[in-house]
Image (cartoon, rainbow, N blue to C red):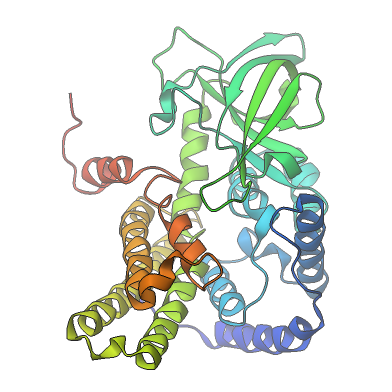
Length: 377
């Protein structure tokens, strides 16, 4: 397995670094987390800058290695995160590029790349979170439309979205993995109600979405009817395979900052803390190598990450939680001060063993698809 970079890839890295150094000082301050219109405008503006500079299509128009370099360098430079563009760039866009028709790609991909449209993810439901195949939102054919009724929860960025990647049950009598369809639903359609959900950290990143006989054109179906589970596995492979790459780089930076803070406040004298920081450094170095391995594997298999993404997501989720537990140890009583660095990140880290597939689900995937163990009964 070759984990080295080619001269062309290193040239791409150098050009990206030069561009980032030039444009990042010109960006305006980031808006308040509670101001969604301003956040959307800020994130779309950054995406337009990437598009104009020729960097917008790395998430599906470039090789997995180029995508890895892009995510690594933008995070190291402190560039804006994808933000409101998260679902479009990292989930829906790659899925449409891999599974959609040429017409669907021409309709939906350019507006995502140009920073013109935002997508949200309508997968989880109140009674079918980790058990995604148990979803009950129904869709039935009525001429050239599907009529959709049901509800979704933890719908990322629904309050700011133009489109929703939506999973619906189109055949209630089929085995539960075979009666699901993947639709692109316009959030402007009649019958949609969005209710934001406030997280433990105080932000509103998710929402409940209620669907009352919403009409979605059949032309908005990605993949065949009742083949949505297979299409969804493509979406989730991107979500678990490369969507967290930049966060590994960020965690390694936080680890260095924690060591510096510990030296300043005297906690560095605790040998147990030093051992914990050292073990976390080794953990994140290993995760970075695993990321490179997964990318190399995706390179050889047509660009879609494989089941190795579940290994990464499983280990990374727990390592991130341990990192911010260590941050609380470094901060001491200040870990209760919401204005201190890393405190909000610690609250956010609690969700990582649940989001993008729980750790229990990831263990099942690893057991069945990598280790070849039999399914549980």
